[in-house]
Length: 180
Image (cartoon, rainbow, N blue to C red; front, side, top):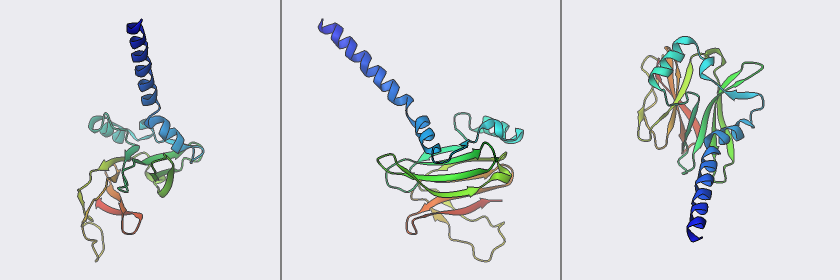
């Protein structure tokens, strides 16, 4: 009898663990997308063929439209998403900071509609140095930035790269174009 109860308890724990894992990031993304009615996460098939081939070859296990990491250094995972409106085709990079109680606040978005077939995102590790590309036509090059939390690299395939990061002092997302 005791052995049967132990087996039932073990099976129950395994089932609960599997269920909680199934409700992980994908259900969180669904919850986040509720803030953007009509939008969906930009799919691989919505990229042009060159970008699609590059992404498949270089990031086979990475969703090129989602970064889930701590952007503001508060210890809670946040989201960066490439999302597209199903009707208008408007495509945006949105950054949401999430608190410990899983509420997320949209703190940044940028329209990437004109390049939606060519863009993808990936995380930039803490401690990385990012600096303005010298190809930018400006006299005032910003100082290189050492990331104190995870950044987000937005790549315009074959065109440019921009790193977005949380500036802790100014409490906002800032950008550095790192490649032209």
